[in-house]
Image 1 (cartoon, rainbow, N blue to C red):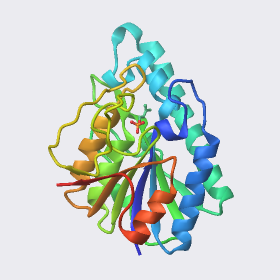
Image 2 (image 1 turned 90 degrees about the horizontal axis):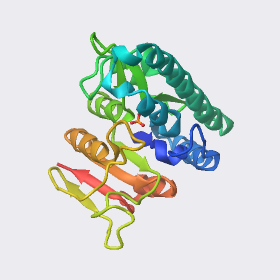
Image 3 (image 1 turned 120 degrees about the vertical axis):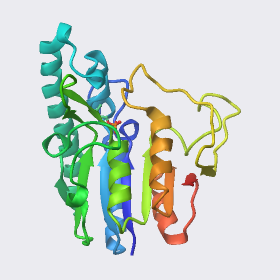
Image 4 (image 1 turned 180 degrees about the vertical axis):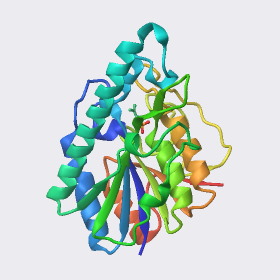
Amino acid sequence: MAHLLIKFGGGLITDKGKLMSVDYNAIDKLSAMTRQLLDEGHIVTIVHGAGSFGHLKAKEWKLALGADEAILSEQNHAVSEVRADMILLNSIICDSLNKHGVETNSHPPSTWASETGPEFIGNIDRFTNSSSQIVNVTFGDVVDCRAPKHFGILSGDDLMVRIGKEISDISHAIFLLGDTEGVLSAPPDNPDAALIDIWHRGDQVMGRHDSEMDVTGGIFLKVRSAELIAEVVEDVWLIDGRKPKRVLQLVESKATIGTRVTI
Ligand code: IP8
C-alpha cells in the first residue's frame, strides 16, 4: 500500500493564459486515475495549482509582493477575488472527483496557513490520513502574512514540500505537469530538448520562467521543491499529467516515463 502525494499542476487543469478557463477533460482523467489508485488500496493526497484562476490576477495586482500602499484597495479586492476563484477551482476538481466516487476533504490554505515559502506557518497534521476512502485536497492560495506584507502567495509546491516531509507514510510525491514529460534539458520549444530521466540534487538546466503569467516559481520551484522532498521520500517524480496512466504504471512497476528526483 502506497500513500501518494500528487500535485495537479495549474497548467494541467487550466489554460494558464486565459482567465479562469478549466480543462475539464484533463481533470476527469485525473479523477479516474485517483479512483483507480484508491481501488488498489492506496492513499492519495492532492495539492492543486492555481493556473489561470490565480496567477493572472495575482500578477496584475502584484499580490506576491505583498501590500503596496499606492494600490491597496484594489489589492484587497483582488485578494478576496483570487481566494473566491480558488475555492471555485477547488470545487470543480472536487466535483469531478466526487463524480468518480471519490470522497474529498478540502483544506483552503487561507483558513489555516499564513506566510509563504516552504517555512510557512500551519499545522500539517490535518493531512494525516490512513484511509483510502477519503482524499484530502489543498491548493496554492493567497494567505495572510505579517505586516508590512499583510498577504502573499503560498504556492502548491510549498504545500507539497511540507506535506511530503511531515506526513511520515508518504511513499511517492508526484508533480503532474501540463506541457512536458518531465524536466527537459532545454525549454520545450527548443528542438534539442531531451527528457532528463534522473535528476540529482544540484543539477543545473537551462529553463525559462514564464513570469508573464506565473507569480510563483514555474519549473524551477518545482524542481527545488522536489529536491527538498527527496530528502525524506523515496519516490519523487515529475510526470506528464496529460498521461495519468504513467502514475499507475509507476506504482505498479516502480518505473515510468518522467523525471525522478533524488538527492
Ligand atoms: O500554482 C499559486 O499556486 P501554484 C497560487 O501552486 C495563486 O504555484 C493564488 C496564484
